[in-house]
Image 1 (cartoon, rainbow, N blue to C red):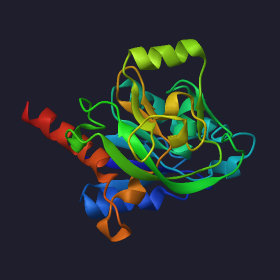
Image 2 (image 1 turned 90 degrees about the vertical axis):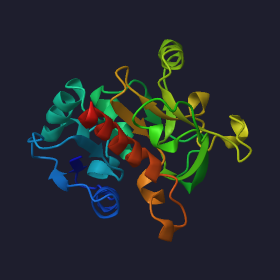
Image 3 (image 1 turned 180 degrees about the horizontal axis):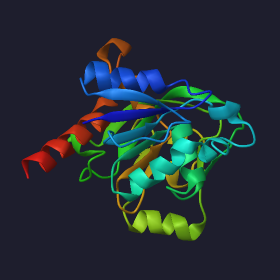
Length: 234
């Protein structure tokens, strides 16, 4: 599976993703500068975390106009996987690939921590690598990670099973105590209606190497590889 990792001015998690896909999972990977437009050789596009364009105006608001994003839109419309992590999630909402918005954290300060999450579904490529495991723990690092959407959009996300990850308490309870940033419905990650585009605020790439103390994020990438093997065998 060929991975392409988009690099904007201010990206700082691009090399972390490349380390996971190229060095740990041994998949061909290339970094793609935001002014490039060619994704013809790419299977999975990753829009990584960081501070694209210094988060001026609003997180992701400038990055959405980069030349590469037109190609990312075409890639997604063709049904190919697109993963947005943290700032990448913000960019995907800005460009319209995912609904809602990521706004200032409830307590108005930057959060750098680890967050327990519940996996809401296990029947899609993004989560099938976790088997029947229900809870994982991933790093978070954001100042504008509070998911917000109108009531109709929230109802659609819930009714269509498009919430894939939620913040929870260490006990596994999805409650206010386990919500680090005030996200509505404790939402940590959502997908589009087709299921091929995922945006999430937690960082799976920062929990994919046992030397860092956790491999809870590796299942997300392994699930994608499983989906490719199934597609090839069929």
